Image (tube, rainbow, N blue to C red; front, top):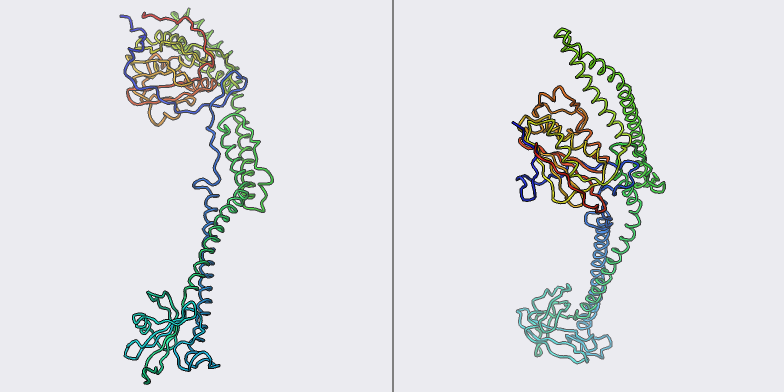
Length: 551
């Protein structure tokens, strides 16, 4: 019974399957001599860093300087206000002493009032005097008005004043009708209706002028403090910006180096921190100098690595080239013995067949090693617009002929998918992926090849329903001589065939030469390889679509 042939699925007949995964590998460095390629996507360019953005050193320095200036300004303003208040209140206290002494001793000239009068005319406006008996009874109170006249004070105010200490200490009290006053009290004998009674006399001066001056001073200090803080912000931003320029230049150099492809190939680290920013007399200069020394060491290490890799590649290429002729001779002599194998003993005939098979396998291995050596030294690919659907159809038809015991499926879009590349190399990529699925999965496994478009990229996907790839080797499946016989079963024919362990390594190298990516996702029952290639930049005329039938 004939094996099932390829299935060609239209858009409405797609099998239920997840969308193609995002490749897990990164694009390789562009190869020399491929000037027709679109520019490969490199490391994403970072947006310019705001020197005063959130979390930056410049922001922290400006904030700290501003806070420090604000604290100093507030402390100075507070001390100034307290000192001014002390001076002004001290001046009031001196005047208050004079007022109380004049009242107790009388005017020295005897022209402004009799001795013993509570308040003497001619004192500052607002001067207040009050007398209270020792039993707390208000005797009377007087105040000098703004025009120099003497008025009376209410008994409630006198009672409030009478509660003060009469020992001569200066005291401040707020009178509801008159405002804040500074008082001094003394114990005296007070004459009332011709009789003297023991009591207390108080003299006070208003603090309204002091409070007004302090309010003006505090307002002026607040204004000056605001100006000082604003000036500190502007000045610190300017100073910090200039001071951090060398550090920013060092960071820019480090950022530039971080975007260089250092993983393979010959690397030239010509970038260095300028000598002005590598002066060890400053902290930033020491960082720049150390960074330059590190780059020198890295450059030397990369040069040594490149020299070693070049020697190894040259050795592999030379050895592979030299082995081609001996292997061809061995195969030729082994093939000559086919005519006489019937006359040989069974063991000799079997040995000669094994010599021929292993020589053929060695020849394929040598060819694969030569191909990898050429790709490593600079891929020589014939770049043209290629219809990927045609490439996949042809590769799958070949795979079906080589593995009729598998179920092969095709999933193609309605329109051609045209990419830039080498038709034969891309055919080799798809053929190797299909051969990998055929070799490492049991008979009856479904293998599906599909072509799709995602954004500006073309996707080639090869999916099989085999046992999957072990997780411990999944990350290195594209390395050379990586094998997965533990879970992915090798077919009996493949065990003696041309499998060399280099198929997926060739896939990765060819895709990298085309500025594409290849990745794999695997779990038991589903393994998917995804190849991403850049689409052709221009629209090509629709070519006649190839067709395939079911054999």
